[in-house]
Length: 384
Image (cartoon, rainbow, N blue to C red):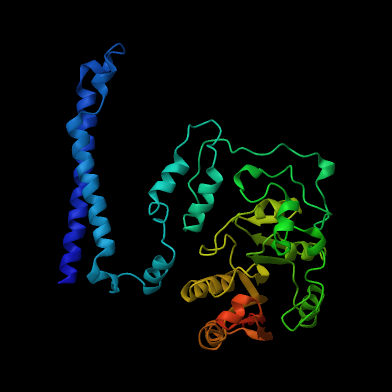
């Protein structure tokens, strides 16, 4: 019964699309046969699409859209697994819609693409970009407009040191941010956001608890295992402090960022580092097996659905070379979930535990929800 319904629905979609093409060809052929079309002085209105044809095309397209939505949301098929489609494709498409995620947000997509070609892009485009990316619309469609950028700073004002005394305000377009209009304001608003370079310069150096893994200790672990670290990826790396610390050891680390409420991407670039403006739910734009270390910052936590986190970790495995390291830095979850959900999920990778440390999360949210931190350094096995 279900198979018959599906075949019938596919046949209707096929007939609708064929009808659309036939009508389009009919209109084109009728225009070619009209002698008035050869006369440059003819009335332009004679070349317009007839109203009845527009109505027919709109009806057919609306039918296609309706049937497609009905097919995608049919209650009998939502929980079924077609034998012709891999189960992981069905699961992943539910977590992060494939190819159609931009079309699933038509209002935002319309706003993003509603511009005059070859002119400045509309004001507010950055907010729409962030909204679309967070909804899985990535990579975004290309546009033919000029993005507004701040004035070029002098070469002497751009620091080569990834830990400059302060970040330059003039290279950021602050109009799109409502809370602050300078890095000093952001630092005073919340010193832990990563914009205060006086605080950041000491990060990844000190050992205050079992949850910490200073960079010198990390490099010593890799050296003792005869494992070279040259390239890395920092997922949810904030303003790029881990990448900055590794740069001082001649190690290149890419940092994934999103400009949620603050200019994180600009801050990473200001420090002479490379930001990747990508969402967590999308495949990393990195080739297979070329990265020596991947760090998951505090953006990776229990708020990410477990199935989404599982796909993320296996994408990490994809980009890591054999013998490379996965560092979960201060991952937090409910204590009961760490044992029942996340530890088994992480264990599916089959990595060797170099470090596995847990501690209670003592802020108000941690005490209220019974949360704990996990810091883990795991090594990808080397094939024999």
